[in-house]
Image (cartoon, rainbow, N blue to C red; front, side):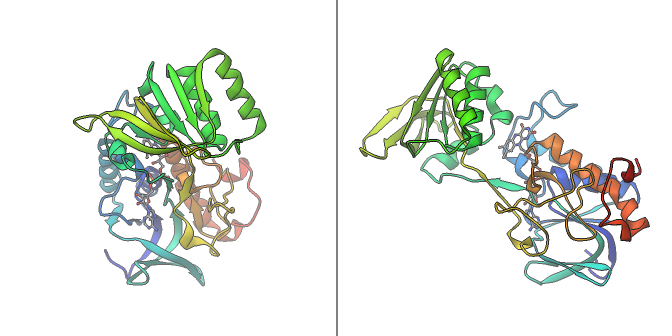
Length: 334
Ligand SMILES: Cc1cc2nc3c(=O)[nH]c(=O)nc-3n(C[C@H](O)[C@H](O)[C@H](O)COP(=O)(O)OP(=O)(O)OC[C@H]3O[C@@H](n4cnc5c(N)ncnc54)[C@H](O)[C@@H]3O)c2cc1C
């Protein structure tokens, strides 16, 4: 990696959003560097062997999809550097300064596309990690609901996603759904809770309050779940429940702590962006993918964000002074 060059565009994060941005930017003949903190690029989708909702693929493994994406961006000349965690970003005159590994290295760019994604919040209960690797624990109903047709699943959580996605799973895919939440009341919006209880009139939904998931016990061989152990937090009594899968809906954590103070973000750490152009509050800096406010948290939307940001580069380079002007679909120049 040549740290002396002023890059046209540095992309932070080698996941689907970052690679889609790199593909378009490199194909437009910009000098593009993708920085990925892990030893292996590819992002969260590396964790799954089965993707069925990425257009153009009837079914594809996450690692295979991301290998193809990386090859495609490298073929167009983008450089992908793994093991490079970006730890700060600042503007000096007209140049953006990107610090890697707490200042071990510095690269400079005319524009930066932020694509560091988000991580699912985990419960940290025994068995969760092993069963996640065996793809029996999921954090995304849209991604994995279809794999649990006519089965019994446990859902965990009490916020909007937990309640809405439990209704979604119970009404479209699974045979039985048990939802546990640690409090007596859900945090989710009232309307979503009503929808869940209405769905429970017609579908096999068991709502257990106030319960927590204590443990996930694998079956012999470690490929399937044998049962889960639930605990009533008021009586402390535990019970076993046979399930085929577990959906954990306890939130996400965007990988944006290092950007606090540099770009505008909401209280949860999602970066604010103009939804038409992906521009952030910092001139020359775009945000794409799962760490963007109001992101749909899907592969197709992450790649779409990346494409949009990369297509904005030429407008920004042509006239950087337009950054703060209000954007309209017409103003994008498409
Ligand atoms: C198990 C699982 C199954 C899924 N299944 C589906 C599915 O079937 N269909 C679907 O559409 N979506 C699915 N998703 C969701 C999908 O993976 C995400 O929406 C998508 O990966 C988001 O892309 P991204 O590029 O925004 O973020 P990510 O994929 O999270 O990539 C971000 C990258 O940035 C890197 N990074 C973070 N911080 C830094 C930093 N400071 N410096 C440098 N690099 C950094 C990370 O290491 C990571 O590689 C699934 C997710 C999981 C976990």
